[in-house]
Image (cartoon, rainbow, N blue to C red; front, side, top):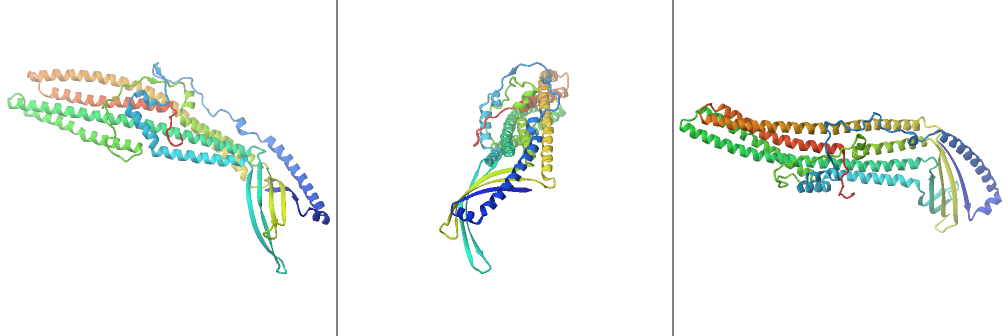
Length: 491
């Protein structure tokens, strides 16, 4: 590190004395020499800086793969426009209220708010280095000579120092910090989007379990009535004991589903409470116990739209911008630093002032030998940028995959539900026919039992399939991205 400085001072009390002893002429010679050295070093720095290209000016698009113009979808479907609050498409006031409360009180969201505040403070601190700094100074020194005569020196005043951002090193650091702040904002948006989808997922799974509970209760009552009829027929000699045992087995198997559904319902309600930032409790909301119909598919656009719509991709893009400016900062850190400033105040040998002074200075500091430290920092920042480019492309590919997968899964899930509805209709017809044949004494009870078991199983299965269809749609909303209107302290 080479530190060459040039300082000019105007002293209000000692200038005449310095003329008399010839000090000013010597100082003029020294300053003139320093001025020549500074000029030569500055010219060399200008030549070096001309060979140092800005990374931001020469970088290319971070997308490294051939991007398709459209998504690969199973069929052309009518697309509905999207709003800021994607969950409004379900038209459920309870869901809307839950998500609003979660965005305001969820502790994970509050963590990201705190991170955003940290990023803003860092950006403000970094940006302040572009401007002059003014500090106050006061000191008193005590000196002893060989004759053991001591003297005091008192100083008090202000100092102004300003590093001229000749190579845009400080501005690059400030821009990098600014993009870090924007990245923190997008990280908050990502967390908010994930929270809304998890709230909606938990909400519909609770309704699913409530429907399962009601359906199991109805099926248990049906099986009890059937068992009662079989016992009456057995008393009249119209059925066998094995028929009663088979129906009892069917009843017990149906009753066994209640504890599972109840435990799932309690766990989901606890989970929803935690997402809302409250103590885990049951019965958070009272619902209609009905799953909504699937709304029209949202406008998913083209793959390139994901770069603007998905907050995680916007987050990575901001990190890439910040990383590019940090490369420029590391490159220009190898060039000299130029600082100018001034000092003004009083100094003397006691409490009373003996001298008022004003001095100006200019300073140029250039690295000469740092054993490769600054070069290694440039290589490190360039490697960080390469890592972010790879991460960005991987995330972009996954985003395209998630959209296309959700569209295909939704289509096939609808086809599966349609097939199961037909199967249920056939099973119910078979149940009615087997019951008729059993009552007529044409067949035994086993066909009735098989049809009853199949019908009740399909009824429960279709509820799960309908719930999963809504969850697939939620995953599509998450995949295409959205900007969530935040209502927290930093919204």
